[in-house]
Length: 168
Image (cartoon, rainbow, N blue to C red; front, side):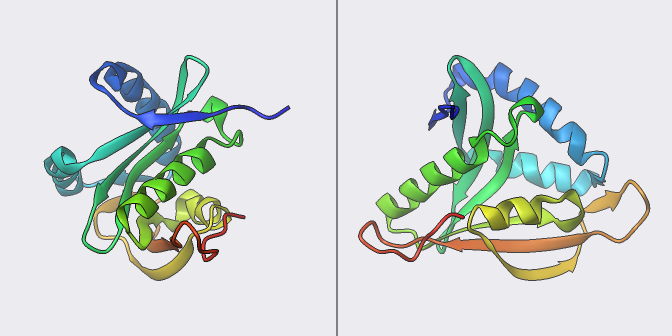
């Protein structure tokens, strides 16, 4: 039996659930790295330009994906899935909705950056993204005092009638 995940745009009433979900989801990332104070400040400064999709299983908020529109792409910022609901299609549903938004707005691609040591490169690869570049991380500190690698990824979005996009 498959889990039905619905996705919609976030509203003000979602904020308490999103804050709680973020704290739970980020806890696993903090076992790998911590952002620098400069990175945290920059993230908060850009927040006004973001949009947010919310994933629900029934009445439960199980994930969200912040994104912003850039001239060349929709940029994913902080996709989060509740640890208790991972591997249930939540990230796939959020990405699928963002692909639909990209197609409706004529945007050719989705882009994101992730830290390689989190294991997220493999997750995003399974969702159809490919690696564009790798570089040393400059805005986060490794918990284990090891070098971190920032991975830039993208997913090319086809037109609605095209077949360029395939999610694995």
